[in-house]
Length: 104
Image (cartoon, rainbow, N blue to C red; front, side, top):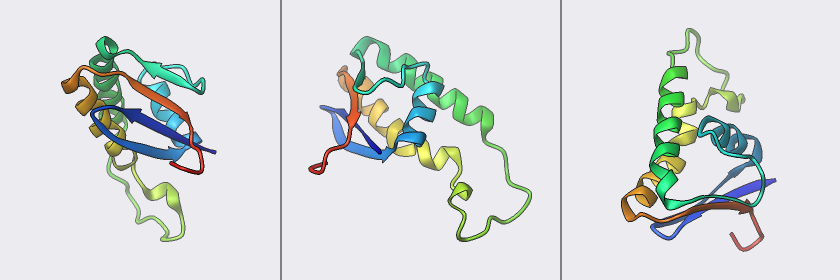
């Protein structure tokens, strides 16, 4: 299942549900689908996500196997959502997420 994040101030972002739910948890948000963050709460969610990502960012001791997708670090996976949240915070708009449709 794919989850699509949307905000009026940024292009939609879709990601696998496991990754989306992980990032939502880091923000202190419910993993219920559909869901939303009201505009006044977006800066707090952004701050929590950035802090959680920084806390777990550590250099890897070994080179990842090229066929293993777990080598994509949390900072890279979170970057599009961080950009969406930053744009939403700047524009003072809500952030929503829902199950991706075929049109997303």
